[in-house]
Length: 159
Length: 285
Image (cartoon, rainbow over all chains, first blue to last red; front, side):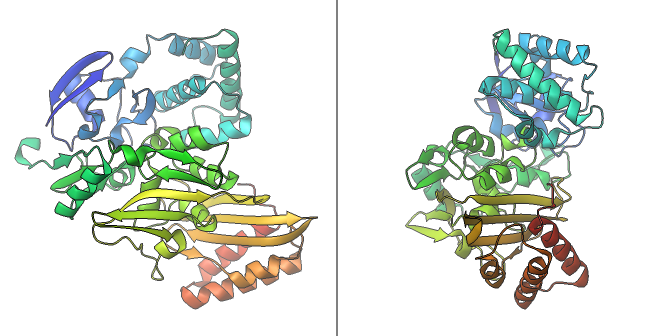
């Protein structure tokens, strides 16, 4: 199946079986190795990519679903202001997520930043319920998310 | 490896008419919306798909959200996160809570409300809530449309009343004011677990007295448990119930559900403990 889609800002095409998972398309056909496949259950967050500007687990997407869509992987996202802003904040609070859950968390915060709403801790707890990882204390992480959202608003961060 | 396999044929209709016509020609085709459940149930690296797949992702009519004074209407292929983004302010809190309990935010960007309702082998997060909210479902096939109450959609044998050639197209959630709403997921919440219970209750309370009350308990398999006798008993009382009242509710509930379902001693004990904690308001989900 020939599939055209936009990958990290460039229109690309590839000939893959429709059954192939997006994560394998990215890794095997485009050598984008920052997207990792660990659980293949959409749980760990390590394979998260942006599809049409929404975070999605690439292990749960068959190739036929990406037709005409726009995919952004970690290779591109690390160049963004949002990523640099978040990493600086994570490091300054010694709460940098591990490689396992990093992209799930980073992209989820990115989505929250796009919503431009004020969230309380309870709402954030519900939001990040599926992103829990032993690498960071959930409570401290949620406090940091609140700080990030407020700081992004103050600095008028372009999302 | 792929070269040796015969790939599936994927159809991507862009309108409802096209979809229904395709489905009538290919009744055995896999209807693919978010695909999360299909992919989660497969451990193999490469996805196994049947010969024909019909993707709902481009069917405009199934991607619409509409709000009227009386109800919220959701296209079956609308993703869970889109519902949360667009309708959080108008949907009942229990529904919002149930939707937020579905997997994680990334999966919710793929998973659809139609998929959450139509999974055959188990009742997912939204089902007990939509059940209590008297949700109506629109089911269409090429030559017929029917609206069915979600309670009737779940047949007595706990299978779904999705007939040959039918596709769930719209979900209509009526607006009604419930000033007591509870929703809990109790047990193992991981994506593929069936070892959990979903508890949902809705009530109307005036001057601290319950004037209307309903609740269901759903297990991670395919059962929805409900006891009208226990609900009637709660009406006229104050919440949280006292110890004696909780004991009566538990007895009534377990007696009622054991008529239709086989409940072993372990499950009986689990349900009993669960009702104890939710009705004494000591459960912190």
